[in-house]
Amino acid sequence: MDSPPLYRQLATHYLDAIRAGSLKPGDKLPSLRRLMRQHDISLSTALQLCRAMESEGWVEARERSGYFVRRPRRLSIAAMDEPAADRAPDPAQYVGIHAKVSDFVARRRQIPEKLNLSIARGAPELYPAEALRSAMTRMLRQHPGMLAVAAPLKGHRQFREVLAQRSLRVGMTISPEDILVTNGCIEALNLALRAVAQPGDTVAVESPTFYGLLQVLESLGMRALEIPTSPQTGISIEALELAVRTYDNIKAVVVVPHLQNPLGSVMPDAHKARLAQLCEQHAIPLIEDDTYSELIDAQMPPRALKSWDASGNVIHCASLHKILAPGLRLGWIAAGRWQARVEMLKFAQTRNNEGLSQGAAGLFMATGAYDRHLRHLRNCLKTQREQTADAIAGYFPAGTRINLPPGGLQLWVELPERLSSSRVFDAALAERIVVAPGTLFSNSSRFDHYMRINCGWPYGETVDAGLRRLGQIVETLSRGAGKAQTTRPSPAPAWSPEARRLQSSSASAA
Image (cartoon, rainbow, N blue to C red; front, side, top):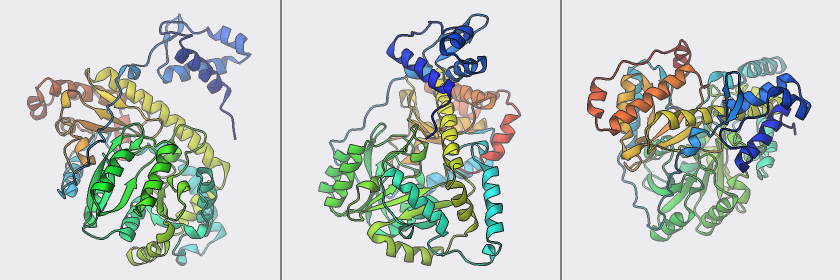
């Protein structure tokens, strides 16, 4: 495995000193010349070291004085509260999440965007478009007739082989024959739910959860039972156990164990083992959405929930949409003991996926370039998350809270004074800034004072101006002047030409 570059190793050394208190806010870092002598490095490496720490908010440059330690503003924000888990959850009413999501999408599309902070996707330049184009060209050269024949129902063989090999890294032992390629993770979830439940059945989900899952459940005529979920450790096992004892009609549990959407929580291994055991004990199928694990800030992704599966009770769903290519709707499912049923449902629903994108992805993922891309993507997203969190801490009023996850594309923001994120959405949309209000992520209104903020765009003038204006909107509304702000918004700030690029790159919500 490649070691981090030298400047990154040295930056980690000084960050450890800051965290340990050996270097305190206001202390000066060694000068560039001293860094060169002390560590036997070049001027270029010394500059990279200081600039990396500056970009992450740990030091600040003072003209003609050097670099000084600072405390990132995000670290001064209080952590979010843990949810109560001592009461059985009430079954969520079938209130029509479609209506809320449709209203959100329709209103967003009516106004040309300057900045879209509502999606959960990276900027186009973060993905290896040129390498994938070359892989597609090679695939067509190797198989010139592939566009004239249908791909196998399960998917392109080489692609499934790569997925099976990489599954070993997360503790799963599955063969290519255990994998069915799908149209993104959303089709995989559809197939999994249809395989284990029927219209009218109850499915336990995290609360809050991705609104796309709530849409799927509504489309299938199923009911969501929302289980309290920790911003740090994921779904509450205690609350789920209580729900299982209270209700005898839970037909499945759906979780995102790693970088949960929208919270960003990562479930510890002990929790994953308990969850798999609980569902196995009560014969409740456990559906794992593992879309984000490769975005965790670690050399290796965490163990999959399915690695604790002893009987085929865990259905593993995943996708490349967030980590490799948003333009390729490549997902897959390993459905355990429901594999044959899922394959027949896939045949009845959408038949075979096209093979060119699968083959190209398989070629690219079989090389070291794929892991290099993932490391680069994680590093970029980490910097962008921290810069966004620092901006929110600086621009938003006191009482704002942020859950800063150990990876991923988004921040979950709690607004002060239980301010309605729907009002913030209205006021921000009038100024062509789009956010994802918390009401999208639940069938109830309990998350109305939260919103999800995307960190996928490189932090620059446009993003900074948008967050500054968003902070002003939150501050005005939290003081009770929201009505005037919504109906007669203040003049928008000047936007850089970068906004036009962002606008064209953010045409659809995630």
